[in-house]
Length: 420
Image 1: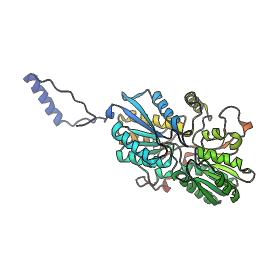
Image 2: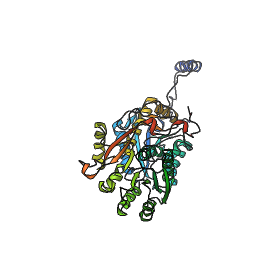
Image 3: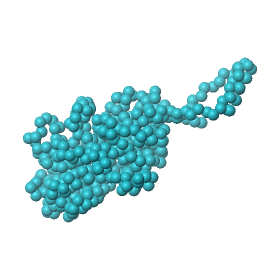
Image 4: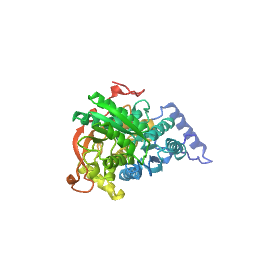
């Protein structure tokens, strides 16, 4: 039986005259072509699942803030789409890919979730994205950075929305090498994301005429960076590239200060730094760090307005991941409304056909490979004396246009995407 359909039982007794009339109508309908009907809303609700890090190293830059951003988008949309309620589920993946994949499978099969989002941690995102493909549901990745999501592991069911390692490398590394930072040493988180961003930055550094003199791999969520920072200091590289994120980045910056890294000789380059990292370490330790961001709360009136609403609920300013979760959720719900269905294929087609213009992105577009391309921003962390009010942490160095920020399609290894 079609699970989308609902039928009512006919009366047990009708007159022969009425029966004849009904029979004639049925015969006429059988002879005429059936009108096209939208699939509508399956299971009488649209369900969005937030799979995120609620308690680990990445919880500040995503976590409960990501779930809140999704709920804010649902509230602002009105709580319903095509007359059906919008439900939000959330879970802590504990930075374990198997937990994320199993939860995604359960949500798709049992809870009838239509779209999953956030997916912070690249291993988690890859596993959950694959499950979305298997179950023909939608995954919108905002938290993870690996470019595998739009290359060898691309899927017609996945959108990579907020940022990726290529954009971070292309923005930060290119600018630093151009300004004289031509020798690099990496502190790399030893998992998919850290390894990917190290590769991406290395390519940019060497392409711009620089060199990589070495690297130290550290475990995810490391507590002691002393040996790694000592090796970086002794390398005499001009730039220490932080190919990590969350609490690992915070601890690395603190370690650099403890080990007396001299900014006159060596500088830190944040390759996946978010504003909560700067807040966590403080301007005194982080001042001067160069980084690339997809979003900054204090950019304009639109960003300030939304960010202050977020602050009222979370008592902190949003990261790019938080803002992207709100933007992506609204984009998804508008696609459902315009397509008049929550069927995966129709919604994905509508999402890719519609430009994104909101406080997060201007003229953003989802490409065939699933990459949402938009402007990125090269930032530098302010000195304490330059900060005029709480969370006033960045000064914009440059805007990186969307066409330059992300990997071009002709370099994509996505099997189904056209290279032209």
